[in-house]
Image (tube, rainbow, N blue to C red; front, side):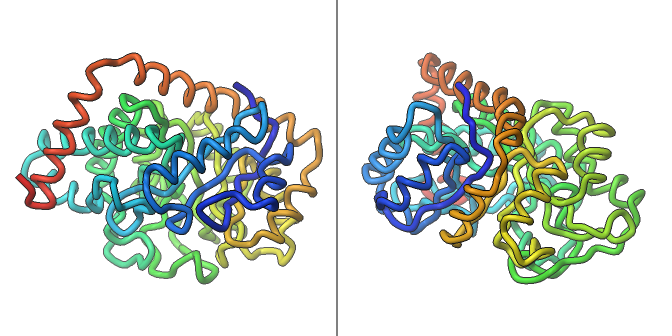
Length: 348
């Protein structure tokens, strides 16, 4: 299972247009990220994913942000996943219960997405909750790195059992700053030592426990580097690859976010992210930019990214195959949904 592409992009509606088909068939396309606008119901979503994957013989990875709480793109006909902060609150009273619920949530996310043809969600969020971030907020499990590490690992175990993979975000931690990197350039003035002592701990722990991929933050840490992390060789190569020993895939965050506007040219932003160490680059909500980016990536860079992504794609295939063979997953899924609905939605 190999792919030649390095660009992940979006589509506009609930079915493919000719422009969508052209972009997704481009050899530089790695995959597609779906949004709420792409979803009507499970039947429509399944047909859309099938149409996407039928476009070409090489695989097109399909992903979504399906963390729970306010970041769950598909809701009708899907289990409503709570905000991760709710798990952190439960952990303070009952650690075993919280970890059990987290594992069940991971299983539900994976099985429900996979049943419609979606390969993975960009989850879990590993940012710490400092009580000040507009964009992270209740998406974070807790302020304690140990709690975040435990609960996110339980989520990952559930995702794996359900046939999916995991993407930890937003390295090295977006939770300390109040600004939203979707809307503006974000700066965190803390020292590298302080960031390593707290925010990086969940990432380091999850790297040791098999997180599949990592997404860097569009945050500038000027005491470390003048560039946002997703464009920083120091962060991605020296810290993430060398110091922390991460060998998985690095996904850029959306290059259309204002926090990524270090250069007005999408082509240059894409090349800078790849040169810094990203394996796959995302561009969303800007179809003209997607076209320019698809045509801008040199062939030799595509080959390198294919090698980097091969294990990730293989893990998707392997986990999905093992989940399909596991006859006990139907029973586990039913019990998991009952537990989540009873715990968070008052449904008995």
